[in-house]
Length: 167
Figure 1 (cartoon, rainbow, N blue to C red):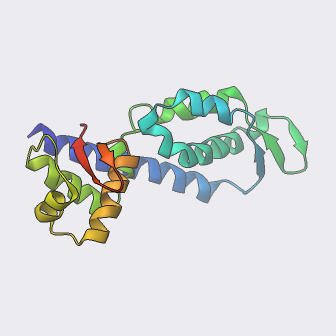
Figure 2: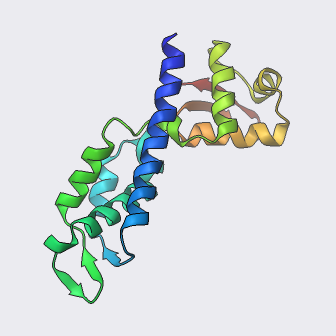
């Protein structure tokens, strides 16, 4: 039961983040924003949250535009982000940066199927049998899960990998 709740929560978080970005992009005009704190954001994010960096940078830009009346205009239509914008964005997204919310629909489905079988370690062939995907599709899905921080892999690319689900 708790696994289904985790899935629903991840879907809800992903939808909320996308909704915030869409609303802010629809409302705010398009100005050029300089963000000198990009390295600061990279340090603040964990390894599993690194794929969120482009989304976070967009939200920082939108929040800077939202508070542009409090910012110094460097040139015409050119503003600079401050640390307040960064902390506001990270505060807004706190608890919503789940690796599951980054997955595509196919990768998410595969994650659920593999999680149901409770395998400690599995190979790509076993994953293909469980999910019913073709080898090329499964390769993409496993790469998505690995890059999202939901999968560990051991082995070598020429000899094959053994995979393990992390969460």
